[in-house]
Length: 564
View (tube, one colour):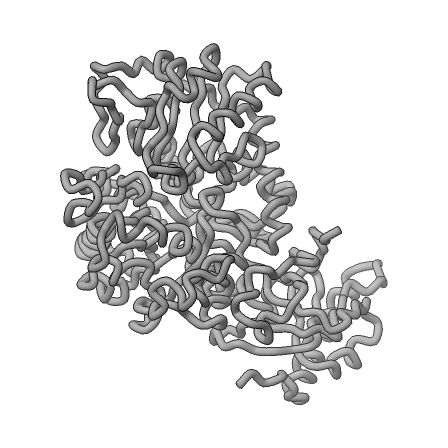
């Protein structure tokens, strides 16, 4: 049972300590105005340093950090402080999204979003309208299509696009970012024809005559991506600004950026140095970036304000389930001749692990299929035996479909399952078609991981999924979509409690980034990152969790978003 933190002795000790610190600060400054703010009359929830849920009504903040939390009696100890009356509203720690793609989200917000299209022809029609509105664009780009939601569930082709736009290249990434749809102009510019060989870890889909259909999967996408002009500094700045404002509106005060380029790394570092980074970022440097070596040589970095931290390398083992690029131990049920794609060779993986661990960097391994996950675990085990790294908190990003025999290895090897709850509710309409019922027993297995003692961390994988964390919390607890379907939840035995879900989006997500001493809760000494929401998550029906709206977002004790 949650207890109001009413231990008056503890509160007074905290208050005395806080007042002493404030007095010391005041003696070193000519500014006599109080920098302390007391947020009181709130319905507050947080996690303490032991990861236990605690409830409070009053939060004391000074110089951007938490001084104390407790009941209303704390106010008496800070008579000179600024007072904020919460009027009974619910206050929780800022959300940490443990897996997203910041610049990709920004570019998606600035490009055309095909997420809600109902057919290939409707998508092509939207693209044609978009092209007419923007005649200055040399490339027409978009993202979000998902053929699984279209009649027939078949991949689209170039012809549908060529009929409407043929004078400019079109390149549209699938919702999961692991497949792309091109028109003939884009294929021509990239030199893709009937004679082009699919690269290792990629596939160029072809028709019955051997001609490219316009669908490129995983590493084959690089053939087109490498000829698209890189974004300018101004475009990157606009994308990051759009993305971070979007995240703040959903109460996300910290996010793990899964695949940071060297250019982005320098850009984020500059923003943090100037204290202009709107959201805290934990950077996973892309293992394919040519400058990876120099970044590793510089070692892990973090600025004084914990705005931008770098201690991780992102590497891929396989692709995604929707495009049948996830590497499976046995062939796909709906494509018996195919077992997915391996995107990084064993030799490359071992080299990356070796270099990252020697530089004291965590390795975050993209793994969706059961073979992809098994390979990731094998490489962690090999690294421990050769170069070490047992304390670096290596992560399996997605851990989506795992062999039942491999689930215990996560705990044995101290590998973090970094998962995205809405992937389950997005994939439930096609997952069994792809891999059959038997393999689903180790799929989206949040409860299995928690029950064995693994520390589950959650994210959204935006822009593949919507960034709204309350959609993820709802999916984790109910195993249902927003229409409350299926009625009993999809594979309901893998559901988790609200407290567990909240922990995975706050204190445990911070722990996965080695940040549990400064983020993830509202314990004294941590940054005062918190949000005010419109309903009490712990007193509403679970089916309504996704409806939660953020009223205000605060970062380091400063309000950075308010719902209009």
